[in-house]
Picture 1: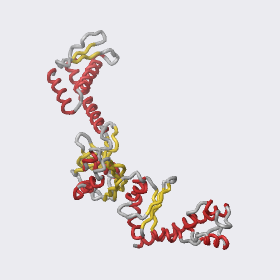
Picture 2: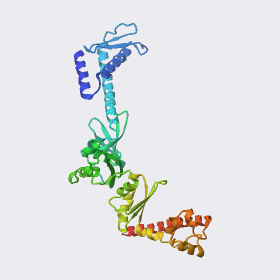
Picture 3: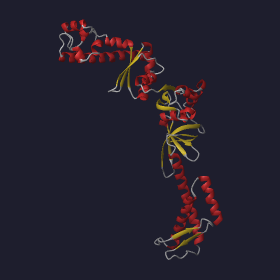
Picture 4: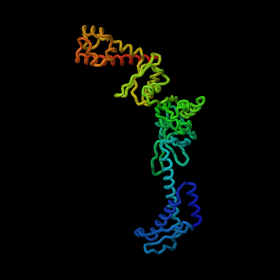
Length: 393
């Protein structure tokens, strides 16, 4: 079997990607195992030598003498069994290493079977596991369907590598755009973030390192072909492509697309943004069941509070006389100073308020606290009415 064995080793290395050295070590291990069966398990100092040029092998006992007799037949059989086992182990290691380096990349395969709540995908050299929870609602598959999914994790198991897949992860959207848009692959356009509600809508923020390249236009493509390719792969999921900006207010405005935003006020300390929109833009900015503002918040990292102009007017229009700490004299003094509503008062600081005749520091603190509390209460009342009205619609 000498030359034949070398030919087999070369073939395995070439076809399965298993290095010849791993196989030779497996052979030597097999020969030692066979020798122990012949000489006794208590015999430990056994050596095996394999000639990498001729394919000949020899086994030496503790005294350095070659083990002979019918060892050739026994060793060949044992060697075959161990080699097969080692080849399987080595092949699993090769596949594991290959897919471990592909975590967060896209894998393409065919639906092989359905097993206990998971879809088993044939990836070629391995099988991927796609749990139902990682499949967007509404997507259905049949045996043989081609599928693309994100590789989430690779684990070693006795049966070989277990490759976990996902069709819901935001990373899938990112990778699909990298495949569709050459400018992203070349590093000219950068994906700054992705927020996603799988099967419904995704928002992707993009930035161009080259002023001459429009990042949004590059992702959309001629006649929308590039983004259509991604949408098609995601089963019709809507995708908003947002121009990323270092200016937080500008980025927040863009993230709430397709709604038109009137103004944004930022609270850097609380990472909160108050967004004002025209009345007819409120439902568009919030989105169906709050989806649009929810995705915008995930994308930007800001807590976004959306209010309509009418809502603001109702809230800020509370007369100062309704505020705690404001008696008839104080009300008159505030109105004389030009502060007629809670909205006017809420914009003031303690120092400015104490400049009003008859208003001390404690009274000013009480008035401001009352103004903010009352306005917050009114905000919730107006918003609850708006939500109920939308629910009826």
